[in-house]
Amino acid sequence: LRFAEALEKGENNYLRDEVRAGAVYEDILEMLYSEEGEAAASQENDALMAEAETRLAGLILDGETFDRDETAARHLLAEASEKLNTDAMILLGSLEEKEGNHIGAAAMYHKSAILGNAKGLIEFGRLLMNGTGVDKDISFARECFLKAAECGLGDAYYYLGQIEEKGLDGKSDKDKAREYYDKGTGLGSLMCRDADPELLGGTFPDNWGTGE
Image (cartoon, rainbow, N blue to C red; front, side, top):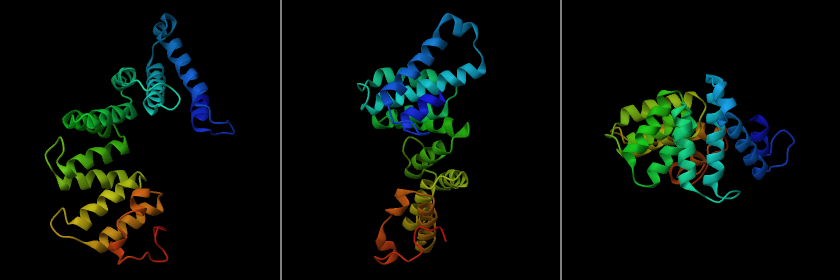
């Protein structure tokens, strides 16, 4: 599985080869789906299978290497989600959200967040902030973003900044918003980097994006 991931991302001195990576994921699944694989079923095998299903679904949804087949991808993601793969839950949630099923999306993001996925915290918090698919709850949303930020996800600071900049919890605090955007930019968040420059009077200070 690590070999396939390295091929997919072009890491560890391997040239990026999504076709070969997809073939490896398929080989892993074929082995684990076989009678021999079922006989040797274990929690470890379930986790391996779920990760391969999620990775392959991602390549299928990307549509660059494989023909995009949302039905096939959904099936793989549903199987992986049943095995408690939280990345699969987030991908399923994004598909539901694109189709306008915000309640279904919220359920997937919430479950992934409960199971400890920091990106799930951001996605669920975003829906809470906007009142999409769930009752609007800025306080709960802030809590989700803060927990995701503690895990090192820079994009969480973008949403924290939005709460402060727009005064979603009652009063706008642009200085606090700037502080959040700066922290997120320091963690590599493009969303924070591209936050409205007018917040800073149209200019960026010398230490912008350093997290200082």
